[in-house]
Structures are given as structure tokens and as C-alpha cells.
Length: 436
Image 1 (cartoon, rainbow, N blue to C red):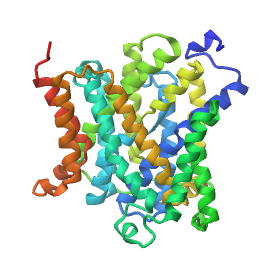
Image 2 (image 1 turned 180 degrees about the horizontal axis):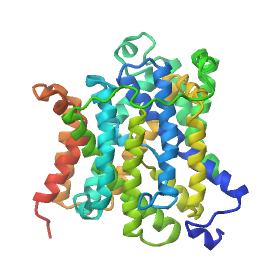
Image 3 (image 1 turned 90 degrees about the horizontal axis):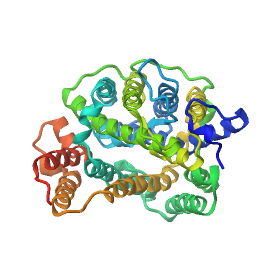
């Protein structure tokens, strides 16, 4: 049984226990943390396994660790000082991939910086905005994120999402699918037939198994690993500072949703680890840290950060509430982020390996949205909100020519799946009368 004193976030377990617990937090979120950078880099046209993509992967690891320290150690009012693990957010992938593909990474990362500042400022008023985001709205948004990303996962598993990759003769080959399915099968077996750290790291171990098979099949090249340095060179504004109002609005809207998700994770962490409600100061501090982590990451080429829900599950499973354990996890991520060879190894991973992993990850995102919707009373009103919001959000994404005459970034926003689903759900939830 877990010692009751570990329900205090300020108490540290013995170091021999704290380090493995911190590593467990890293293993649970590692694959999910680097995947958004790989997808957005691909949308921007960066060479797979090239130095620019490796750099973005490094920044994902480095600033996940730094943002985690903002949460666990804190600076003044910044940080919940709870065991909250930060990582690169999937919520932004649709919007950022669209912006990066049409306007470039400079515009996308500038929008991340400004969106992070707005996110930071939300910490002062987050409690007043929570009424806009009941479980119905948040569940719909998370479901839309997962459903939007699943086709990307299938393309990666089959050989890649770029036009030239889908046009290749090898696209959808048995060789690609055997690798992707190995990742899925190993991940599921470990998740449901093992316990502890191995179960929590199921997807990571599944990726390693798929990686090994891909290497046996001659699909892996380590050329970029040999050429990568041991210490990363951090560059401010690597793609410049390019302001675009539409891109900023798009990222800011998703930032608001991300802030509400963080409120939920802070509340769930306090409930799971200490059997109490999160205080107003903890919720505000979590939001401040979220926004600051996003803004600082954007300056150096990192994508927006958010709290990772799977790590909340680890707190609930272990019963260990110590924020210092997650601080150790953050330090491990920082070390990984400072070693480019780690990023090069990740970037050498063939796309079908990544595809097998993200089929599971993106499916779990959709499942998390469905799980949240199970807490919603399915009245006719709420079912109509779900139907119309998803129809608009996913429909416009599937048929982008339906809004081909909208201005550039508005079209990107309208076809991102997430933004129209969120906007429609918020508006309908405000204007449609409740049923008795």
C-alpha cells in the first residue's frame, strides 16, 4: 500500500524509488510528445530524417521538460506545483499542419508564441471561462481531434502522408503493414498482459519492436544518427517572426481549449493523488505554466505544450502525488532534448513504425473524447449539438473544396476539424435551451 504521506505533493520518495517513478512518467508520454513535431514538420515539407526535423524533435523533448519544471517547481504564481507532466499537444496538430503547409513554419511558430502569451493571460480569468467548456464541448473537441488524426495515422502506417509517398508503388504494401501491425500487437499485448512500467510504456516498447523488424527488413538508415552532434545548438526564432492575424486567431482558439483541458488535468491530478479538489491557485498556476511553456517553446522552434492526461493516470495508479517525481521526469526530458543523437534516432524511424504507434495513440485520443461524453446526459438537445458540431467539423475537413472561396487562413481554420467543431459546440450550447 502506498504510504499516505505521498499524497502530499511536497514530499519526495526515496531517490531509489523517485528516479524509476520519474522515468515511468517519461516512458508513458515520450512517443506522444515527439509525434506532433514529426507530423507538422512533414506538412511543412521538411525532409524526413533531415536536420531540420531532428531539431524540431529536440525542441519537443527539451521544452516538454522545461514546461514540466514550470509546473512542478514553479515561479511565483506560475505553476500548479502538482505532479503534472507537460508535453507537445495533439490539439494543435490540425491547425498547425495546415498553417505550416500553406504559409510556412515561420507563421506557424509565430502564432504559437502569441497564442502562448494569450494562454498565459488566461490564467487570471480561467475560472470565469469554464462555463463555456462543459464536458459536452470538451468531449466533442477531443473526439474531433482524434477522428481528424486517424486518417493521418493510416497513411503513415501504409508508407507516408505526402503525395509522393502515397503515389509510390510500395504504399500500402505488406512490408509496411507488417511493421505497423507489429507495433500495434506488441503495444496491446504489453498494455493488457503486463503491469507497472512495462504496461505504461507499452506504445514505446511497441515502437521499438516495430523499429527492430523494420531494421531487419532493411527499412532503417542510420546515416543521420552518425552525422548528428552530441550537444544541441539552440536557435531563437529559427524560422523568423512572421505575423498573420488569421493564424494567430486559429492557434489562440485552440489554446483556449487546451487551457480548459489543463484545468481538467489539474483537477484530476488533485483528485487522484490527494483525494481533494484543486485550489483556484493551482488551477491558475497550471494555466500560467501551460501558456509560458508554449510561448517559450515557440521562440526556439517547439510546438505548444499542454498537460498530459496519461500521466494523470500514473498518479492515480501509483498513488504517489509527489511533484518532485515529475520534476525528475522533466529533467530526463531536458537531457534528451540536449542530445541531438536522440532526435536523430527518432527521426530514423520508418514511417510505418510511427504509423502503427499513432493508430493506437490517435484512437485513444478519440476514445478519451467519447469517455468524456459518457458523462453527458444524452438529451435530444445534446445529441443535436453533437451531431451538428461533428457534421460541420469533420464534413468540411473531408470536403475542403466546399469552402474554397474563403480567405486562406480562414479556410485552413474551417477545414481543421477542431476549430469548427469547437466553435459550433460552444455557440449551440449557449443558445439552445436546456430540456427538462
